Image (cartoon, rainbow, N blue to C red):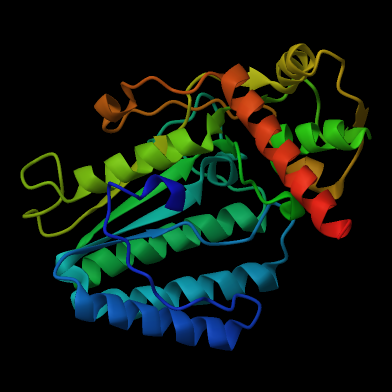
Length: 302
């Protein structure tokens, strides 16, 4: 997200957030919010924080929600001149719903605490707008992939397959190969999220300014689902060899939906853009991981 900001935003540089220490993290978030309100006549916050995944414990998710609530409370005094965008999880909130494809009006039905935590965070934001004004955008984001993904989270099928290929080891897949997912290239998602955040504060009927504040929810997706089998086939063409894959079983498999096809029916003109093709996105992901691996090897050899 930060890579997409130059030239589009005046970025506020706040304090470093010590996420590993919840008490200090909360204090830093509150300090940063207060400083932002003091310096900006009009402001936007894009909350893309959170290290939770499908298998994250309830305690960890509760801590993240506490950080989120503290930040909203600290922003409340300046809500009338600001907006907040929240990065939610389409897969998390629609995991147990039907039928697909899922859009903004589809019933939400999380299967894991992770998805429920995202819904709780969405509700906290909507309540914040009702109580304090301002405007809010909830981005229900499909499966992201691309350069810079955090490999320690053990998620992101494309990145994990590419990394395993570079290391010459098999990658474990925990779900059926006919599982359908919507893969959205991360830089494309960042651009779409920034455009939606701008739309949110436009004056007039399209935006929220002048309307007393509201919350807009939109699915951010490529809207072109692929099976995992198709992903592996595409990687085989790019790698010029078959990816080494092992099918496994995991306790989290039961909370993984078979079909998470997505479509958006909100602000659909924002989707009228050329997205990065899946092969091009995979190639960029592979190049980034190869460079990161070479840099890490160089540092170890010093």
